[in-house]
Image (cartoon, rainbow, N blue to C red; front, top):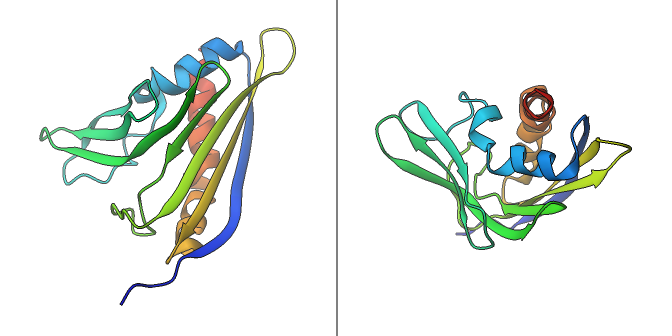
Length: 155
């Protein structure tokens, strides 16, 4: 029996980055592997690389040290340097679940000379939506991840 999908309030986070929008976008996407925490992986082995393919329809995934690849979702919108939208196919146990209707939208908004406000909205609709929301809204979720991103973008 399939569990009904529950929709919860989106998780919204933002961070101000001392970098222009084009650089902020490039670091978030093309340099994704330089700031994504290696501890945040779903593969059986340690994560070797995290990848966002630079196009609508591209994959968002990890490569393990054992050579295995684990998809997290796909690129739903690719609009450099202002916006990228990714599907999120990980359930509350961080296992791939293709029944999820979950999206992560990241907007890169000019915020003064040489700065960008990066706004992230994670919309979740899933049988275990409350569990997913609790994980991504925790200190080890988007808040901590965006801080790692900010530090890399400003380096």
